[in-house]
Length: 158
Image 1 (cartoon, rainbow, N blue to C red):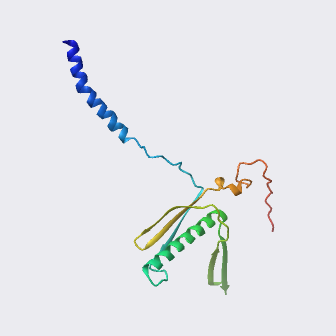
Image 2 (image 1 turned 90 degrees about the vertical axis):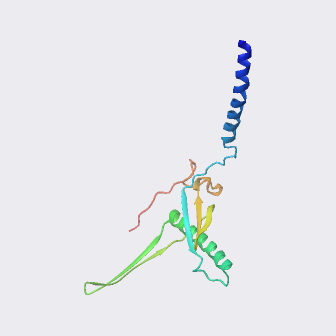
Image 3 (image 1 turned 180 degrees about the vertical axis):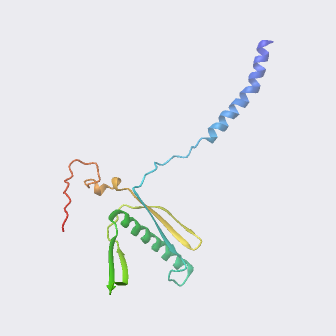
């Protein structure tokens, strides 16, 4: 009687435990996970589609895609190289006559990856990432962990 009672409980518990194990295995993430790469520099470029030149909406969208990508590259260059600022002020008889400031960015950006590109309403958005340490052509650069790099002392000229 004791063995019969044991088997009857086992028969009712076994399917339930198998179902629980199966469902818990299904809830695990079986998708392969990609290594998340961290970027030292991330830039976002924006462009409106209505402001673009083009005969059709498709051409305007393609131009907005290009413009947003270039804007993101400009943002990356600003982060990596900085912005050259030029300022002009004009004073006459102790009064400010004119005041102006100009910004200029110049630099070469290699190895940037497009992280996301999408549009929201009329705005086209491109996100770029740049990881300086993983770029193969920069293996001997000063920011790489390399003892053989020759470092030049900074000079101040007056």
